[in-house]
Image 1 (tube, protein in one colour):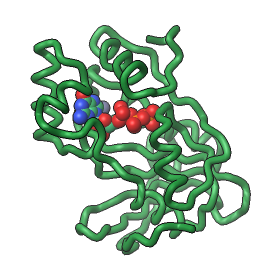
Image 2: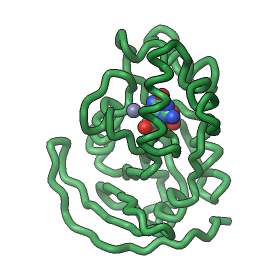
Image 3: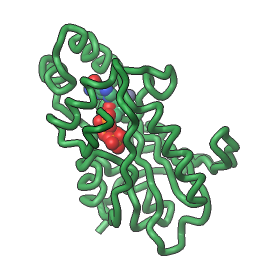
Amino acid sequence: MTTFFPITRAAMADLPTRFGHFQIVVYLDAEQKEQIALTCGQLHTPEPVLTRLHSECLTGDIFGSHRCDCGEQLAAALTAIQQAGRGVLLYLRQEGRGIGLVNKIRAYALQQQGLDTVDANRALGLPDDMRDYRVAAAILTDLGIKSVRLLTNNPAKITGIEQHGIAVTERVPLQMPANNYSAAYLLAKQVRMGHLLDSRLL
Ligand SMILES: Nc1nc2c(ncn2[C@@H]2O[C@H](COP(=O)(O)OP(=O)(O)OP(=O)(O)O)[C@@H](O)[C@H]2O)c(=O)[nH]1
Ligand SMILES: [Zn+2]
C-alpha cells in the first residue's frame, strides 16, 4: 500500500537539456516546497522504470564541489535515463541529508577539523540522516510508477521507498571514482553508513 502524502502537481513543460529531452513536472508538497520530477519516455507501461532519487546538494550539483559525488551522480543519472529512453529523476529538496544548507556547511567546517561526515552531524546534535522518502513515493505514484530499477548505492533509499509502496526490482549502482577531496567522505559512507561502494573506486 502506498502511504498517502499530499502533493500537488503545480506545473509541467518540456525541458530540452544538454543530456537530452525531458519533461519537467513541479510539485508542491505539504510544506509548499517545490519538488521536481524530470521524466523521459512512457512511464505508465508495466516494466520497472529506471529511477534516480537525487537528494539536493547545492554545493555539488550547482558549484561542482569535489567534496562529494553528487554533481557527477546527477549528470550520470540523467545520461543513463536518456540512454535507456525511459526513466525519471526526482530532485528531492533534502539538502544535507535533510539537515539543510546551514547545518551542512557547519558539518563541513567540523570535517575540516578531522571529524567524519557522521560524527560531524552528531557533534551538531543532529541525526546521521534525516531523510524520508514519502514525497518521492507520492510523486512516483502520481506519475503512474509502481516499480523501479533504482540508481543508487544507498540501501536506505531502497528500504525507504519500499516502505511507502514502491517496489524496487533492481539496484543499479551509480558510483563515481573518488578524488583527493571526496575519498575520506566516500569511505565514511561505506564504513559508517553501509553504502554499497566498490572499494576499488575509493
Ligand atoms: N549532513 C551532510 N550532508 C551531506 C554531506 N555531504 C553531502 N551531503 C548531502 O548528502 C546528500 C547526498 O546523499 P549521499 O548520502 O551522499 O548519497 P545518497 O544520495 O544517499 O546515496 P546515492 O543514491 O548512492 O547517491 C545530499 O543531500 C548532500 O547535500 C555531509 O558531509 N554532511
Ligand atoms: Zn553533495
